[in-house]
Structures are given as C-alpha cells and as structure tokens.
Image (cartoon, rainbow, N blue to C red; front, top):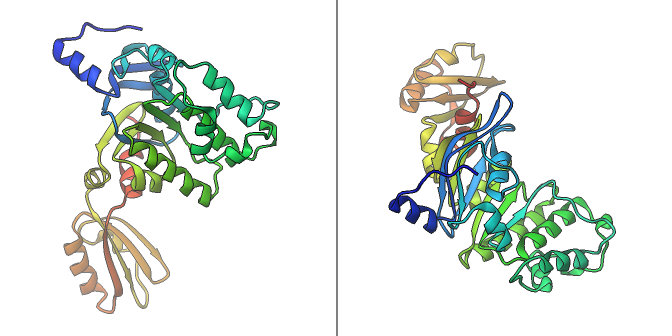
Length: 310
C-alpha cells in the first residue's frame, strides 16, 4: 500500500482517529470509483455515508476494510493499516452481500468466527446483542432475509470491535426489526464504539447519525451534521392550494427554482420564500393552506448528488 511520509502532526491525527483517509484513490479502468477522498472519523462518532448508486460508498468501505488496495493515498484505522486492524479484531463489518454457511447453525457460525479472533466476546453475548439468541440452533439456510441480516450483525459484533462498518444494514428488515436494530446500535455507541454505515434510508441517517458524508462520482461533496447538510442546499419549499385554474407561470415567480402543480395543489422550491409568497398571493389572492418549510435531508441529498459529473 503506498504510504507517504507523515509529519509529527499528521501521525497524531492518524493515531487519534478511528478512520483516517488521505488522498485516497481507486480506479477500475476508466471509472474513478474513489477520487482523492480525504476523511477523518473520530472515535465514538456515528457517521452515515450517503450517495447514489455508483457514488463510491462501497469501494470506500472495501478500502477501509482492506478488501481492496488503493491506487494511491493512505488508509489508517486507529493508526494501523486495515489488515492489521482486522487481524486485531478492531473492525467488525456487516456487509450486505456477506455469505453465510447454509448448512451451519447460527450458533456454530458465530462461534467459528469468534475462534478466529484473539479477544472475542462470548458468542452467546454477540447473539443476544444482535437479537438472534433464539436462532442459535437454526441452520442458516432456513433464515429469512431479515434474520440473515441480524446474524451478519452478530458476526460483526463477536470480535468486540472498536469500529463497526455497516453496509445497508437494515436491508430486508421489517419496520419493528429495523427499530430494534437501531436501539442496539445506540446501546453500542453509548459505550464509545465508532459506527460508519452506508444506507439508502435517509431517515436512518437523519435519526441516528452524528455526521453525514455525501459522495458523488467518487468524491465527497458534503460533510457535516444533518443541519449543516441541509443548510448547503439553500432554499425553502412553499406549498399552497390555489383555487380555480393555475397556469404554467408558477415557475416564473420570484425565487422559484422548481414548480409542481397537481390539481389545485402547488409545490414551489424557492431561494427567496418571502418574495415567492408575496408574488403568489398577488397573483392568486384566494390561495390557502399555505406552508413554508426548510429543505429536508432528502432535498439536500438530491440537490447535492444529482448534478452531472464534471
């Protein structure tokens, strides 16, 4: 793995970080899967990694786990190379495509993985934390999709890792199981564990992440709290009911960047909601049920990740 010489200050940053990525690049032929990514994750932080398909999330995770080697740049996990961190049981990973041994029971599989680590927690404890203790004697081929995800979670926990990497962790889980899963994650993070998760469920990032990183075309396009990410997508949404016939001129109102009309219900994206509302009321004095809201994480996500690649 290419590694540049670090200054004393840089060594301190790397040693004190749960994850430290600098100048990270990974290309597959002409595709820039990860392109000059710099990212530092503090111990105890819960970070959501978001982006559309092909943004580079999974490749970044693979680089942190040492499953693939970067073309350039550095990867450190608690100051160590990924392979060292994995070998020492510092990282636990729950990958969406992680295979299970169909003929093994859940308990056998978790105990087998525990035996690969130097200082694992008891397999029974990992099963209990993942909510699958009652499945210990069931063969993996008999598990539902949501149950398989929870077993993957138990496998990720059994090394008692300081860092959990979760790739689409709640895929195939029902609503109740998903809620229970995140309760377990909160209990873990309360003990100082670091969690990095990639998800397509934006409400999960909004509810559980301390910090959100948005990726597009292999680069980081936004990094901050949910509130900070929302603020980067400036503007508000104006909704109103317009009695009678509204014409296709709504998009020409001051500040409006996008207008949608369904029957009498108008939705306007605006960079100046005051000017938009004044003009709207002047044109449609009978407008009612007016709402003005700030952009949500989904709006910010779309605004920041839907641009065409430069």
